[in-house]
Image (cartoon, rainbow over all chains, first blue to last red; front, side):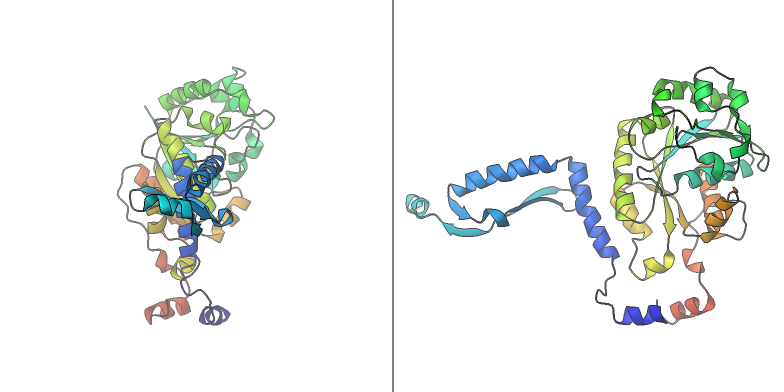
Amino acid sequence: MLDFLARLFQRHPLGSKEVAKERLRLVLVHDRANVSPELLEMLKNDLVQVISKYIEIDERGLEVTLDSSAEMVALVASIPVRRVKRAVKMASV
Amino acid sequence: MGEVIVITSGKGGVGKTTATANIGAGLALRGHKVALIDADIGLRNLDVVLGLENRIVYDLVDVVHGQCRLKQALIKDKRFEGLHLLPAAQTKDKTAVKPEQMKELCLQLKEEFDYVVIDCPAGIEQGFKNAIAGAEKAIVVTTPEVSAVRDADRVIGLLEAAELREPKLVINRLRPKMVRQGDMMNIEDIIEILAIDLLGVIPEDEQIIVTTNRGETVVQDQRSRSGEAFRNIAMRILGEPVPLMDLERDGNLFARLRRIIGLR
């Protein structure tokens, strides 16, 4: 009965297995790609340098991760932009 | 010539030793000559799970170092015709044996036994490398948890790199009720993620604790679900097509009624 009540008032109707599956999926993308956190960190730093030449970005909000769809592994970068630099804007006109 | 099967998992505590004991006993019950090797040198456990701890005289390291003959170290399980155990050494460490020596040992055992089943230590270091050195087939044990499945994935990669192709999966400690509630990964989820063939599924069963306490296997217990699951696995290893057992058959009348009227 307790079980039933607990389920009635559950906050996550989907159950925790979906969370487990998603976490496992992401962990395995990294494991299988054999990309170390250090390598990812180096890549992140280089990305910041290159992009900062053209766009002012929020370095702290930068996120670089691996993700996978059916057959492909993708490098996903989420980069918050502060503003596009004026000099670059002028040059491209 | 027999066949050498290693039972491995990466993560500890998922039930490798219990699986080794029960699969070995299951094969012996079907009339085969079986040698079980405890390859966990320094942390031997298969002897206590089988209730044979008081009968050890020599161990695997003694055999490999030529301090006794293979026959002297093999312990015959009196409860199962054809079942034998080669215990691990308790006072040595993993470096006491080399992969080449394990290969040689497996070759010797294959001459006399139909099946040689190796209980691999947890981890992916030297002990793992020793345990898989002489094996021709591999069984990977996992439980429906993120950590265990992750380690299983790593081990599958290492097995394939070592030319142990197409390992088979055993999912241990599945709780049908939690699966129904969406709080545990189901069989399909795990198979899809690991992309290997399924050998069997063992439901969580308190009877395993009871039999292990007594130094017995669960495989000869006709009433237990886990025993049935292990018998099925033994039959599949022998090439008999056995369908997966119905895990929904468990539960009391109330649980079944609820399921019938659609409350899961």
